[in-house]
Amino acid sequence: MKGNWKYIKWGLIIALIVISCLYQISDYPRMWYDEGVFSMVAANLATYRHYATTIISGHQFLDFDPGITTGPTLILPVAAMYMLFGVNILSGRLVSIVYLAGFLIMFYLLAKKLFGEDVALLSFVSIFLTRFILIPLKWGRFVMGEVPAIFFLLLGLFLHSGAEESSRKYMYVLAGLAYGLSILTKEYVILFLFPALLLDLILSKRRMNDTFLMLFAAMIPVTLFYCVKFSLLGGVFITNTLGKGSFIEEFFSPSFIPFNTLFSIYITVPIVIALALFKKIRGRNFSGAESLLLLIVIFDVLFFLVSAYIARLALFLVISNILLAYYLLDISWVKNKIGQIFAVLALISIFIVTSFLYANARNSSENNHDLMMMKSYLEINVPAGKVIETPEYEVAALSWKNTFYMPLGMMPTRDPKKMDAFRKYDFVKSGAPYYLEGDFARGLYSVRYTREKVGKYYREQKKIGRYILYRRKGA
Image 1 (cartoon, rainbow, N blue to C red):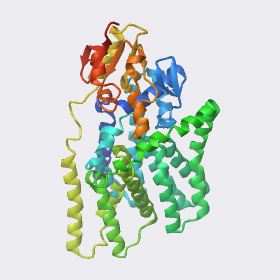
Image 2: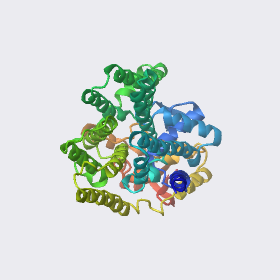
Image 3: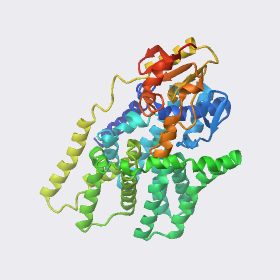
């Protein structure tokens, strides 16, 4: 029976990984602005040897644009895939699903190493029964940095645990390098990871030299990348780095503090924190691994609550599912049988309720058909060399036979002075004979591409799904 259960268990794990990584990977989820930005950077690197966003296709670039918020750990392998198989949705996403598979495997291995096989299996399955199903269903498929960063974080935690067991210096260095790759992939990871590691050092009385060796190693990948940027850009590197201030404003804005958003969406997180507090009140101590995971969760919650609500910033809280499974299976801190039964039923109900809440998380009608049809239409019907102005990065990233104009300073800001400058941009003066409108032109960039100006100077030529191509009147 045990042998059969082993095969069933691994069959379930492999099936979930394969379905998550391969099912309709080109069609779902729908490619959008952010994925388009990072795909464009990789495509520019593969085609023109520029690690940059586009200003004018093939002619003018913004090298190491401060808006490139995903690191080379994703950009470089995607660029390599584009060089081998061409610039298309599938070749870019093949890199993403390798990271997604790595994340799922490492999640299971970390939970198993820290808390045993039963916790590992339950926590792994719980990903698909909670809001975090959006990782394999959506975010892990995009050419974006969150899931690769989580993979490196889990790898770091796995190696960190091994270092604690063996006390070998090189293991701390390896753990630090993995943490550093997570930070290199998404720089904001440092804002909750380092405080958690330092507080864990204080509370657990770990050896200071080992922790600081690990932190030093963590800065090596980031420092090397910054040195490369400085060697290539010189003084422009400093300007671009300071330019990240506008993105910091986007992350931290008092008008966007969602005090209840996190708890209402990621319902497992407050329950894990509450259970941890209850366990402490009942006199049970935390294990070293449990303590570090809790601190990472708590600091990530704090980071999320003082940042603008961007859902993917909370994806790192998937770590809380390991703790939830651990508390579900280790409830000896509940003193009596009735309490234990109640705890089990309460925690199981979380999985059941959230699985119903997010059973329709995927919109089955969502696909990339209109994107690919518009790409083909542009390549056939817009004469070579004719400029198309657009803020729709996903189209420009894939349509390499056309020339796109994407003005500097496209990212909107909530700073009143900068927003005023953003509004004052007059796209009519660019003289582009074509204008392509999509979701972002009608949304974030509608203050630039107003209905009045579009109607006055352009006429609709072709509408395909979410995209409308306009041609300048008289052009």
